[in-house]
Length: 403
Image 1 (tube, one colour):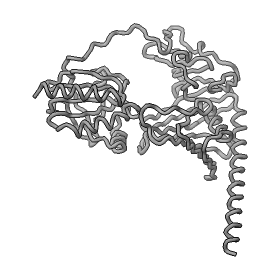
Image 2 (image 1 turned 180 degrees about the vertical axis):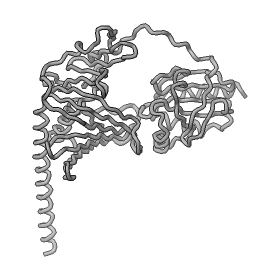
Image 3 (image 1 turned 90 degrees about the horizontal axis):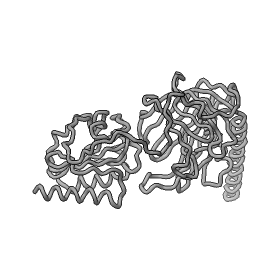
Image 4 (image 1 turned 135 degrees about the horizontal axis):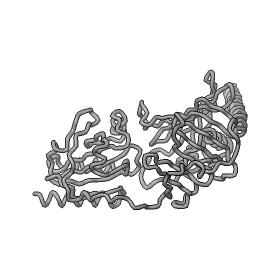
C-alpha cells in the first residue's frame, strides 16, 4: 500500500513538473512573440560588469541606443546606433555589414568589416531587445543541456536559464559555443537571467554570469516602434572631418622607445591591504613586475607560475609584483587576489605608471629588473609552455651574475 502511494505521488509530481514547464514555455513563447514585434526601439541602457565575488561593479555606465530589427543580417539580426547618455556623441554603430567605433579625441573612426579575423560569429554586444529575443529563442529550441525556470516575483516574472555544456555559450545574435581558450577560465556553466515586466510581458533587465565575469544590462525610458523602420548605413554616421581607419590594419605611428637597458621609472602604489608600496623600497636582487588586468585570461593563467616563483626564491633574491591596470578598484583587487590565491605583492596601477612603462591596455607584460633597477628584459603575453621558462632562465642568469 505504501509503495503504491509513493508511486502515485511520484507520478503526480512528474505530471505537475511537466505541466509547469509547458506553462513556462507557453509564457516564453508569448514574450518571444512580443519581442519579434519590435521593429525599432530607443532607450537608455545601463551596462554593469563585475568579477565573481565582487559586491560593487568595476564598470558602470549609461548609453542611449537606437535599435533596429534587421532580418537581412544573418549574423546578429539587428542594427544599432549607440550614443553617450546625453546623446551628444556617437559611441558605436553597426548596420549589418560593418561596425564603427569612434575615437573622438583623435577625430577618427575605426571600421570593422569582419574580414581581418575570420570567426563563425561577429563578436559584438547585441542591443537589448535582440539579445533578449535570442536568449529566449535558444531556451525554447536548443538541444543543449539546459535548465529553465520562470517564477512570479510580484510585479515581474523572473526567468533563469542555466546552460550545462562543456563550453560557454555567448549570444552574438544566436547562441554560440565559445571554444575553450588555451588557459583555464573555470567552470564553463553559462547563466542568463531576465526580469520581465507583467504590464507588457517584455524584458527590462538581463544578467549574464560566467565563471570569469558577470554583466548586466537594464533598459530605461523605452520607446517602441517610434523610429522609422529603415535600413541604416554606417557611413552616414561618420563625421565628415573624421579620419577613417580599417580595423586590424597598422598605420604609421610614433615609435615608442625601447625601455630595455633603461632605468626603471620609480612608482608608489597601493596594495590590496591599502598600504603604499614603492619600487625604491624593494631590496631584492631581482624584481619581476607583471602588468596585468582583471578579466584578462592569459593574466589569470600566469598566476600559478608567479606564485611558484614567489615560493622558489628567497625574498633577498626575488620580489614578484603584479600591477593591475584595467580595474584599479581596491575592493575588486582584494576579491581577485583572494579568489585566485595570489601570494605575491598585488598593486593598483594608475595612468602615470601605464605611461611611464608604455604598456597601454596590453596585458600581461613582464618587466625583469636587475639589482640596479635596470630593465633587463620585457616579455609580452603569456603561454604556459614558453613564457615561464624564458622568465625563469633570465632570473637565474641575473642571480648567478650578481652572486
